[in-house]
Length: 380
Image (tube, rainbow, N blue to C red):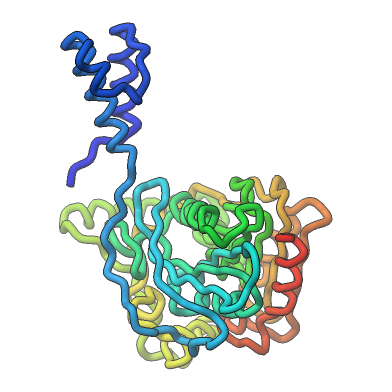
């Protein structure tokens, strides 16, 4: 359906009302219409139409009801599927996990990631584990991926995906059994960076965990270990990506970047082997996961080249806990992000011997007790 943006309609309506000297309320009723001039009736109807269009109607999503996670279901929590929408009008799908026994209103946590994964993978594991420890949690699919809505599919955006976290906070804030003053977030891998960006902008977030984090804007713009940090290298990327945009438009479809290979080359670097061991084996494979299958749209990378998401990390006032494996290829993202933070409510925990994906699903490595202590202290 073709939609005119609400902002544009509001600007037009306000201009019309200003021109006519109209100062009536958006709540004008039919009684007022009866006594109004034809011009005023037209203006009142326009205002009612704008009000109707400002009331969001969620997309109808197809949600799998059977348990299809990469981890076993806990008998300590209740689980159900829920949906909510972000301010761009995209409906997001989530798994809600709730302790079977609790008193009063709960502290709540929204979980997302890794980058290119779905809620049935690591995010769901984290959410269920934290629900076992007394929190109401949701693990959600980001816009354009998994069971969530949005077109075209397989797109990422530093802005929209940060908004996805904020939309999750919207949802949690209005749950009857949640204390809206006790909401935290967990971002895994690329969503660790998104979580820090959300923490910098959303004052409702009281505590943030970034686990085995990536700064996707930095790695896209500069390459791994900043090996491509030059204007020429970035220009070459922009040129290639914009050429791909033209090809996509000609063909009427979006080229996929491709996920991990079906067969691992013998000379693959360790971090590729690390990802392969999770996404392409029974350990973590999921049919809706981009990383397990065809990957992102090639042109998804464009916006990440120019939008550094940790620009205002030094202004985060809520509590932050950053977790990373000592031997992870990505550990420098966490160390550098932590160095940007200010305040005595920030902590970096390096887990000895752990690699990047150990913090996806290895319950003997992921410091759930530490996270529980952190959230209880900061969501009290």
